[in-house]
Image (tube, rainbow over all chains, first blue to last red; front, side, top):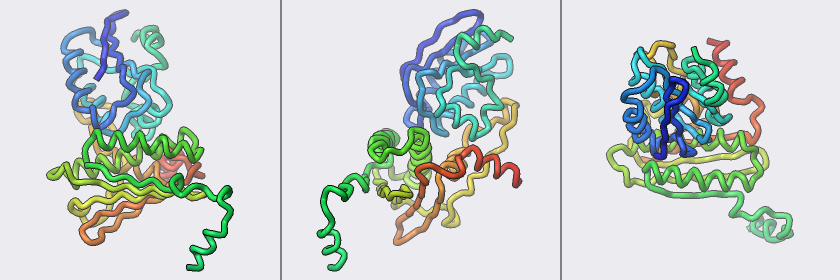
Length: 111
Length: 175
């Protein structure tokens, strides 16, 4: 999986550079993100703007990542394309995550 | 014979090529093979001018069904093949998915009711969404077991009268 990470405005921004988070890469995704976020700022912003397909395994991997971060840190999402946003809405997971239009919005929305 | 004669008499230029109305693929029950099939399916759906949103619904439902077969029915025999037959009519897309794994429990597909989602991290479900998505996205779902073969029949309206999110709202209201 192609994942990049940087720190900006007190948040770690993890960008998924692949177009799919599906059953074929869910375990790999979880492992990559776990390594990327082992330490770092309290806020982790997952930039999904390049992702145009996610299935329930991919969704599960994102939920698992949030749980791995524990209570002290927070996983937020940004840049969801319509296909991806729909999966979050249908599973009601949109009520669990803070979801931002873009990384810039997420950084501006410092809470 | 009569049907064959009737088909023969149809002018060729008005009949849609048979190859475009059907898509049949057989592939091993493995994640990357499933992904490759979904790519083929997308290209085929687009030749039928199905809208991008509905194409995504169909791809997602099939992804859930096929990965469910891979993770459950074929877990101990990953080289076993899955067969998918798609047929497009003017009003419907019908898909039949076949595998020779063990039958579904009680020979019934799961209802796929949404799992409870709580805003508390330790309790958040990481799975259990697959069948809910299938039931939301497909217009009709039917399962039968025939001669050691699991057969799942899925129907999709090209443009659903009741889009998935409205269907979900209705379900929630009736609970």
